[in-house]
Image 1 (tube, rainbow, N blue to C red):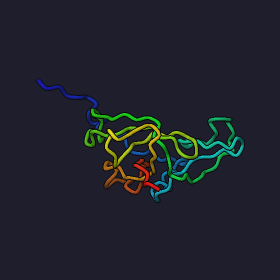
Image 2: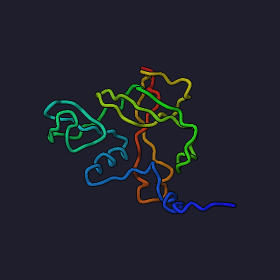
Image 3: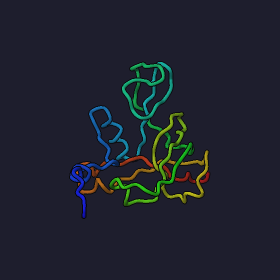
Image 4: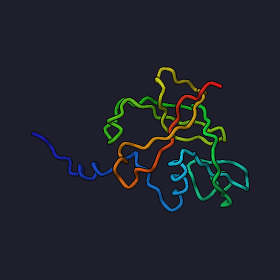
Amino acid sequence: MTSVDPHAERHAERHADRPEPDAFTRTYWAAAAQGRLLLRRCAACGRAHHYPREFCPHCWSEDVSWEEASGEAVLYTWSVVRANDLPPFCDHLPYVAAVVELAEGPRMMTGVVDCDPPTLCVGMALHVTFATPTSLEGSDLARLAVPLFGPAEPR
């Protein structure tokens, strides 16, 4: 006997890797499509933050502005994901979910690419790269790109 998931249609339409730009984050996603990573910086306390907010999460000032990040980061923590049934992640197993610490200070949830998981280590130098999720191909969001991180080039 087979069972039918009553929510299958809803699940088929939902893609967890699809950004949902709104009026405020449109600037962020437009920059990412151009290969630029943006942060918000507070004029009151001087601290940068990520994810983009209209106020500073440190001092609550609304005097924040966009700033281009260097794209440099270090690996803070990670997990190798070997099981995930949520589309489209199930098509890309295994993958590395990570938190990186940006050179500007904030930490950011992201993915690590172009690196064998056994070679990962805390403090590993990384650099931002951008990719368009395959679930966006052919959609009205196809020009969007998400920031991911890969090993930094040796200097």
